Image (cartoon, rainbow, N blue to C red; front, side, top):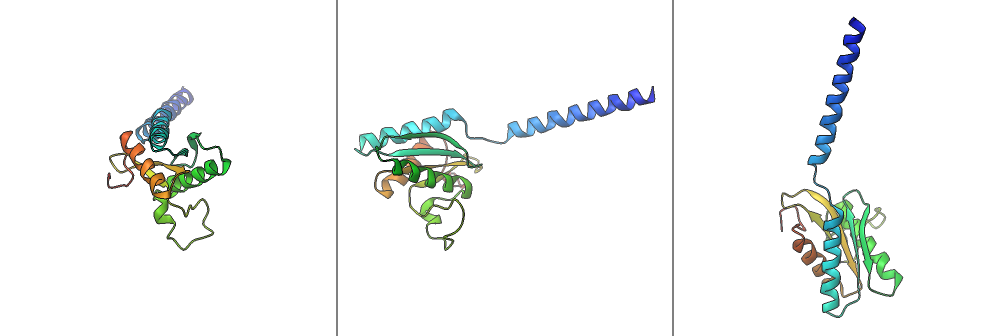
Length: 159
């Protein structure tokens, strides 16, 4: 009888812990596919309108590629967009800033402008977007405009 009570208590404890863990994970903001695709599509449309063929790569904060497209026919453009986006996602800093860091051997660190981090309006970092194929200033501006159109910010301060 006592053993059954202990077993029942353990089952209840494990169940409570599991539900608490699941709830905590659900409360942490994540970059969803729909939002990542909206960022990608907005930037591609803006670039096409300006006459640029670009690649756009959107990553979550863990460094996983969530959305990607390449209008440009050159494969290197896609690789550079992924490099910029990954750097912005994991460091949560724009690549125009990381390009000034004196850390040439740091992993996943982009040194060219065109990658911007993604934050919720509450300042939680959730990823990054990289754009390549146009002049660097356009790449960064396109990424910023696309993030803001999706309701996100490109800095922890909500801007």
